[in-house]
Structures are given as C-alpha cells and as structure tokens.
Figure 1 (cartoon, rainbow, N blue to C red):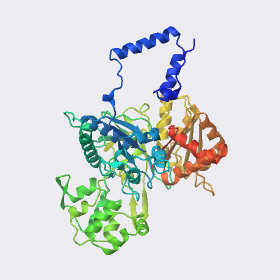
Figure 2 (tube, helix red, strand yellow):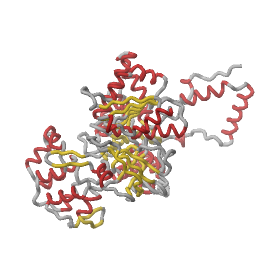
Figure 3 (cartoon, helix red, strand yellow):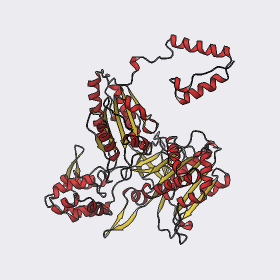
Figure 4 (cartoon, rainbow, N blue to C red):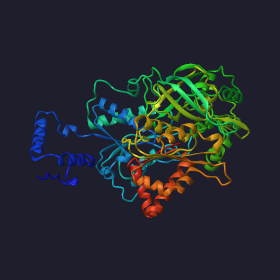
Length: 592
C-alpha cells in the first residue's frame, strides 16, 4: 500500500519539512503509519504539542540585512527586549524572506547595514531590487521603523537604511519612529532606537510589560567578554610572513584566549581595540596648540586631553559628520564652501587626516572640549580569524598587513595594523572580542566541495577553513585561489599550503603573482583560465567563498564569475544563476 501526501502547495509545511515527511512516510507500513497518526493525536490531546492559537499571533517582524553579522546580533537583542514588554516578534533574514509576505506585514522593523560605497548587504539585494521595482505592492497596512548601520567614513553613510526608510513610506507605510543611522560605535544609538520603537508599539498594541525591563547592557553581561567588555588576550607570536625585499609587511599574530571562555568558528572575526600612536597624538596636539594636559569630560568623567585622544577618540580618519561639526567651530568660509562641493570634498578627503583639517582650517577660539566633541569614538578594528579552534585550543590567529604610506607631505599609518605590528611587545595583552559572522560559514556537510578566493590578507579565513576541514576529516574537495605581488617574498603560509596539498586536505591551488611578469595577472584571470572546471565544481554543489577588498578585487571576481557562467549557459541566465547561488548561501563574501 502506498501512502500519499498532499501536494506541497496544499500543506502548511515548509519545503524542507514536506521533503522530510515524504522520506519518513515512504518507509512506513500502513500499520506503522496508523500508529504514528494516533501517537501525534495523543500528544496534541495531552498538550504535549502546542497547537497554534490566536495567542501565538506574531505582533512584529524584525527584518534583518547583514553582511558581517552585526545587524543579526542587534535583531536578537531586540527580540529579547520585545519579549520583556510582552511583544511577540519573529526574526527574518532578508536573504530568506518571501517577497510576497510584505503585503501581509502589519509591524515591520528593519535593521540593515550598508557596506562599501553605499552597497546593500549581499543577502538584501533581491529585496532591495523588488522594493524599487514596479512590482512593489502598496503597503498602506504597514507600520515600520528602520535602523541603519554603517561607517561615517564612507560618503554614502547608511544609504541602505535611508533607501528602505524612504521607499517604505513611498509605498504607503506609516513610520512608527524616525530612522536612526548608527556609526561604527553603534550600541547606545541602537539601544535608544530599540527602546523608543518598542515603547511606542507597546502602547499601540496594548501589551503588558514584563517585570524585568531588559537592555542591551544586561544582555551583554550574559557573556563574560564581549564587544563592550573585551578580553585582554596575551600575545603569543608576531611573525612577519613576507620575505626580505618585499614591499609588503604582513604579520601573523597568535593570541591566547585561555580563561576567557570565548569560542569561535571559521568565518568569524576578531575585534581588536587599538590605541592611537603617540607620535600621531603629539603632532596633532602641536598643530592644535594644546599640550595634552587640558582637562575634558569623557563619558561623564574628567580626563586629560592626551589620554582621551590616545585611547578613546578617532584621531586620524576624517568623517563627514566630524568635518561638519568642526566647520561650525572654525567659522571658515573656505571650509564651508568645500563642504558644499561634493567633488572637491571627495578630493580633499582622499589621503588626508584630522591633522590636515585643523592645519588647513585653523580655529582661534577652539577649546579642548569643543574639539573632542567633534570626534567619534575610536572603533575596534575587525580581522578575519585565520585559525581553527579545533586545531589551536584557547588560541586565535589573525593575518594583518601593516599599512604605511606617504600622502600630502606626511607619513601615514594604519591605526590598528601598526598598533599590532609596532607597539605590542612580548607578554603584552590586547583587548579583543569575537564578532560572529553567520554569513561566511563552511557547508554543514563536510563532503561538500568548496572554492576559496582570497588574495593578500584575504587568505586568512581560508587558513581557518582548511584547518577546520582537516580537523573534522572532511571528505569534500577544496580549491584555493591566492594572489599577491611576488612568489619569492609574498606567498603567505606557503609551507602550510604545500603540506595540505601533499596530504590531500587541499585538492588544488592556483596562484597569481602580479609583479613577477610583465603583464599583471590576478585571481580573476586564474578563474577565467579554469572557468570550465570551476563551473563543473559549482554544478557538483560546490560552495564559493571570496574574501578581500570589495571595491576592486571582489568586484572583479564577481564579474569573472558572471562571465564564466555566461559562457556555459548564456548571458541571459548568468545573473539568475549567480543570484541563486547567493540565495542558497553557496556564494558567500567577506569583503571590506
């Protein structure tokens, strides 16, 4: 006797649930199927399985678009805060969201990041395109609020959040609370937005708050160490990976997590809190005509100006909000004109720092307190983790390129990279935390093939990937594309890759060293050269990963992938093929 299930469209089950039920039912005899039916009926009758009722109706949807995971972490915090007010929420990732569901949403809270030059997260692209298309529905039934995450160092700060906020209103939705745009130091702004939005919804939905009012601070305290409470990690090793004569300076750092209780997975990120270089602070103070002993108020406490600039404030990178605040103090007509000319402003910002701003547009009436009030807090620097915890218990490794360059008559250096490269001695500790990145993860099935593309320090997470695959005995094939300047001096982790190739943990590796030949070659050229094989791997179910610079490398790799697919199935189908890879989480990017 064959047991038939209703068509998928006629059931309330998801695709996965329907498939699993089909597999289960297929091996049952009629007697076993009857017993299972009676068993489930008994569980429901005895309240051992809950049946949805009107009490289970979800009040609010939290819709999340995230590139690195910060938005997702905030959505979890908002879910807990809502529960404390008696509000029922569901979190939905934009990449998994059913577009037609928009018409049914009553209360929609959008938490979305922006990266690069105003780009939406990879998992939000399809939804953004739909919202701005002719197919977008009327949303007059919807109430909404938007929280944007971004970096004010970029011209199009929080653009994706701005776009969502504007478009939802254009489609008829009613705003619950004004949009908030969060900078890299986002905790307090995000918490204020969450509380304001949830308080308003509690009134509108007439819910009864719980006895305990949760906050982000109380949620953070459930973990001993976090972004707000970093762990002082002991430096174990600091090794320069480049050979003598290289134009680059790439460091491999190993830090101890012993006693922290911190854990991580391949694909996660290490947050590092640096300090500004003393010579940079001294030069800035001299230009400002301060000596550093001036007293200021910092977080409601009195502090010396030097100490505040050293460890609390961004003292190099100019952001547009910072420049606008300074312009109000400087009262300089040329600076005001510069701020209102986008092209000239972009030219000015390129390669210049705060010291140039105060030198070019001095203010005679500037106080120490007024100056620091223009600055944003010194944000942590994020580095892709380059190790597997299974291979290195109680340790975390990162790969860091020291940034040094001349610009506009001054020697410049990266805050975080030179902090790690130059100013951390033996037995020193570094404040760190783990930043989860759920959008850059190995396949759950270790037999799945993987393709990894990571030039320069973009190789870091793939060292973690391969270490992890070795530790678990993964049977899936693995293919690595790596590129840098010179084979002799810049083949990062060369001995390790050769060992993995010999053992079979790494199936194949293709390398491009751009300065070793007259015509430069990059990883995207290698992809094109092996396009048929790459496409064949994708057809076998391979997952494709890209890590590195978004503006140039990742863009070029994406275009190369589209061309490879187009050569196999035609250009009309290539875009959809690659978009489906992203939607299925088989094409993931860790880009910056």
